[in-house]
Length: 68
Image 1 (tube, rainbow, N blue to C red):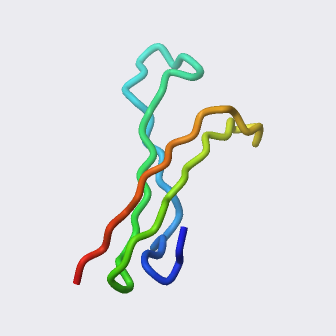
Image 2: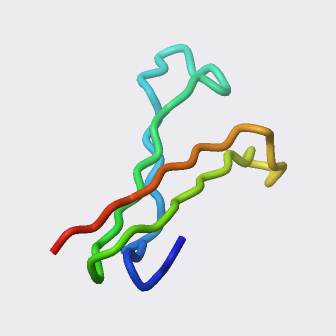
């Protein structure tokens, strides 16, 4: 990520899916907030890591365009 184009504005926030049975690993959503700093383009790559900080093969990449 080119930190001159976008910048993460805080920590990621994880919200669990409804889980009345209290099952481990039931899923949820993580939200990341970024702000645009200048016009340009940057590649953003996110890698999944388990709570034990073990990196998996799961990754997501996107090109982020920023217009002014």
